[in-house]
Image (cartoon, rainbow, N blue to C red; front, side, top):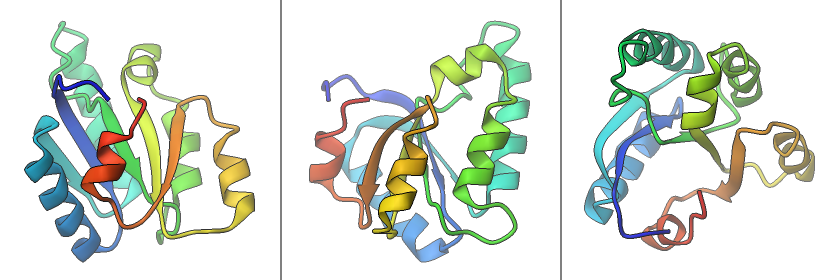
Length: 137
């Protein structure tokens, strides 16, 4: 990963404590200016749809460079989020890179995540400064 900070990062995890810890790790690493946190896939998709409208006028600052996505969430799990993400604009899909950040060690989840072009990495919780440094997105 380059030393150039990203503009924005998004965390999507139903566990608020995980979000808080991950937010602190990201803040202390200094890799981005903004962190958007969501406790569910539906609110994250709505946020991205609104960010797309802002991006239409040439301002991509609300679009996250990286989305850290949990798999196991109620209402809309990570894979359902990915299916909805596919319906967003090409600009958004090219701009946002997704990193699966999960406690799942199920090999089927790893394999399934690789079917999505926008998923660039799969890392296991907890997020660490080392795992942030080793990101290749």
